[in-house]
Image (cartoon, rainbow, N blue to C red; front, side):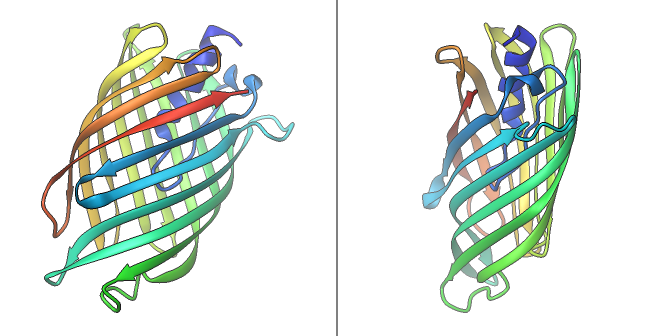
Amino acid sequence: MTRDARIENTCRILAIALLGGAATFGTVAAQAGPLLFGGATFAGGGERSEYVGLTGKLLPVSFLTQKLVVSDYHYKYGSNGTTVTVNGQSAEAALGVQKGWETGWAEATAGARYRYNRVSPEGADNRSDGGEWGLALTVLGQQEFAKHWAVNGIASYTFGPKAYWARGRLLYKVFGEAWAGAEIIKHGDPFYHATQGGLVLTGISLGQTVKLGFYGGVKKTGGVPRAFYGGLELTKAF
């Protein structure tokens, strides 16, 4: 695997969303094969999210990428003076097109996403309770600039639940293939909204094909107090 391919494999995982985002190979990185990814995020009040997935050029078709993601999550928000708690799982399968160039890459995917939520207290938010299918559209990409800097972003919207997830990261290459920087994230649906921001260190090499990252900061969800969040992300290239 070339140096550029390893960098793109590392950086594209920054676009993996907690609720099942997408990732891409660039023109060079697409030749490197699939990428297995996973991670977990924790926040105050017992909130958490875990995900695992596979993405990359799984079929021998130029510019075509595939993605499979499953996740498990627990979060809460305030609604009409009541703290609503949601426990759920989701799964997404998507196809997309990708394009890479010397200093960056871009991708767009579309796929089916299913989520199943259990809301408490019972009847607090029947609109988010139970199972629901949706069409998930995602765009993402990265651009390096000024030799050691890069911007990385993702925006995803799921029709049906009307759920959105967006993140931007400003990164600086600190050593080897590792990047450090800042991130800001907004996510939610018509009844739940959260904004969070913090610091990130990712792309730490654990051998030739495994990369590790950490992040943490402050999260504000509508109707509940601010809380710290933190997590890790792990990738393995094949």
